Image 1: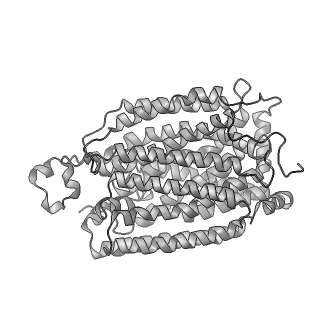
Image 2 (image 1 turned 90 degrees about the horizontal axis):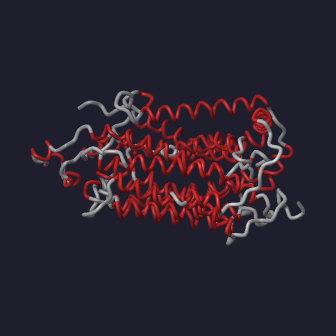
Length: 525
């Protein structure tokens, strides 16, 4: 197009009814993205007293549906329902998600690990006989019962987001080049803001004493799921009546679609960007598995303060997205990633070392660490969405957006499953953190610096990322294609998705959680 737009049509007005309906999808997804991962710390760590590896696996599992985003994108692109490719899938996604939330609301939950909540803050040597007798030793093994349904609920709202993302790509491609990215920035700012709302619900209503919190009141897990289901139920109606979508005419058959999509995967522009996203993301996602145990036993962070800092971080993330969309559309993508990554790690190292070696053990000090990482993560995320719009082809919006964003999302579970294997070689288990010896501090320090080295290594893959939108378009036009690289790309992504799903699911069950590939278990004392 003369104005640099990639598709015919009028750009979306941000205050139109249609835009409000689209933003509502991201508001609902964002709210649940704050609720479902947010409930893990108070319930699994505070209530059930699960191992750090279990908490990491639970966090990964509720996010792992995003690794399957491409498959949902293919379904949305390929199989219209009543002639529509997007709205019916939003309706189905919300119906499924709300149903799972209601099912979880009807589930029973075991007694907490600590019969007396005061035991959270009392040294083990000072427990009375009655307190010791009150311990529910089976509680830590109950995590899988709740995590798997939460994962299924995530699949439901993922289906909604996949369909909404495809709509966003279509609208974004109508924008002139100097404005392209405006719609994406708006929808993800809304999503991030409502993630903060979900985190606020966790902060105020899951901070009871039974969750290692400080409030005398709280919601039960079942009540929280019921409320979430009721809040999201209206989105079923909004998805159908507020959004506009033209009926599909002349849709490709599934075989023709997959053939053309396979041709797309062989293009250098696609497999090069996928390689950058995957390999840099795996290294950048490397973390320490002892983080949640440190949070509870070294800095004594309550669920309220943990969720409060999540809110602050989420708002910071939303501001990062908004500023990137307003001022960063022409930034050099490589340079800004290097600057923000190195700056964040420098501050992070200062704060974590002070905590580990008991120089400053303040919960606000420790909880501020993840917030710093929101800056580079937010910028990386927006750059990823800009790249997708430049590469998307008409008819493949859902699948290609799904492939490129799923690649990004896949790196977290795969990288963290690798981190569990590495961390399992050190004395950083729950009992070790509670003991807090010099040897334990040394091992925690080693795992933290391994994590930093991995994050810095992620920068080695930056040459695979184009510097800006024009360079991305040039790569798309002149990059050529390779059948071999297409096969290689599909192979490593398939291995990673199977590995990450299998390893983290196995970590949830007592019969398999101690296998070597899941990260193992703490040595028997």
